[in-house]
Image (cartoon, rainbow, N blue to C red):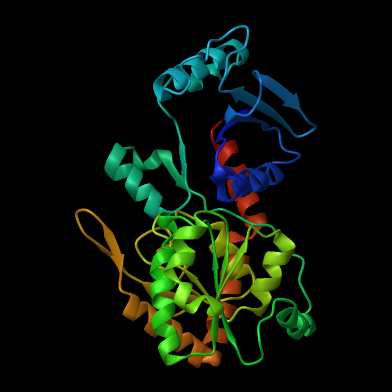
Length: 342
């Protein structure tokens, strides 16, 4: 069987989408499924195919090669049409027709996504399978290192650490968190908010310039550094407005952390309110969405002031990771799905 994955060359591919591809390739290793990753808008001088033992990477550039003209590639429709023409030259096996017919099966990452597909595109429910993302277990950091790690990251004794991980983008809801954190400091001054991720720094730095000594921007971190922060964090807040099955949320659960997350997306399924974390509702208006920052501040304060509740929810979150989002379960689900096609 040949599986073609399409990956756009943008910032997201370095985060959730890139992680999905990595975990999927690992899960399907040693199977009879041949993986081809088609990289759109690749920064390459021409169309290229690079083969490894496990996958083929197909790089389709913005500019033209000797066969297909991409002179109008900035136009989305033209570029997409040219991509199809190019793929048709190379995809010649018996599954080629699958690219040109209606989709036979669809993988949704959450029930939330499946519902959207059914409502918006009127798909047959039998065609849509829900398979959550899976993530490989992190190498554990000894608990004895916690104090040393807090010193390393300049988190002071008795200081509560609140952690946000994600792109600095409006869709991640970071502005709501910053406004909330200012309110939280009025009730619990001995707190620090650490923000891990890249994006539009200036917008967010300006928002917290008056409390800048309480907010730390780390930029992009390698996994081993990020996992150190998970070990020393007290509460994780993820007010993202557009998630389906977030790898960040899975990482947090893997590390046994309680998570406060929006209840309007796939995060509602991932985080069970009162069991593995707390929900924060999103208020929808015709032209915008909003989060009640007073309510979010109350929920953050509750977890910070109740360490036993944090511990209980964290343990439940860890169990949820082991039973739903561990890579061995992801592998089993994906293999069963692809084998069921035939």
